[in-house]
Amino acid sequence: MIGLDTNVLVRYLTQDHAEQSAQANHLIESCCTRESPAMIATVVLCELVWVLRGAYKYEKHWVIKVLEQILSTKEFSIQDPHTAGSALAAYRRGPADFSDYVIIYKNRSAGCEATYTFDHKLARHKWARIPGLTEK
Image (cartoon, rainbow, N blue to C red; front, top):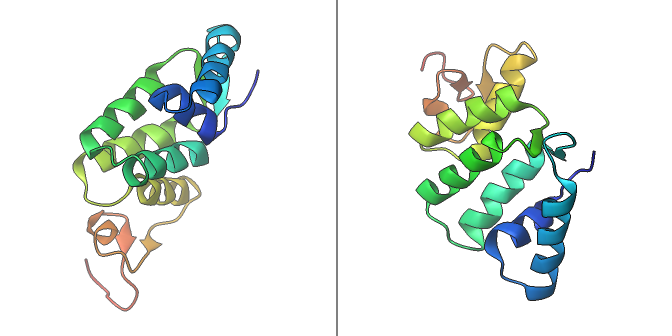
């Protein structure tokens, strides 16, 4: 098994750098199989969303499609598929960033009843709270 960093996935998805994209293509197409899938860490998914939305200006609906494809690709093994899937579902319907939802679901799986934040978009989630407010 191999692990993939964000920049390899970005080159594979965007094909924006001829040499690195060719290397990423070869690596993924030759080394990532159903029998030996490549590991993609949850933090890589967070970075990927940040890069695609920020640097590449992809619209949210396209980033959601990218995440859905990655999560359903048998040649990839997602580090924490339950958290990634739950965060994607929340990101799909919510106003906050994907990484914020990952934090909420990671905290929830660790036993936290709520995640405190000053992010008002994230605070709309049922498991998020703003410090100093007693009710949602």
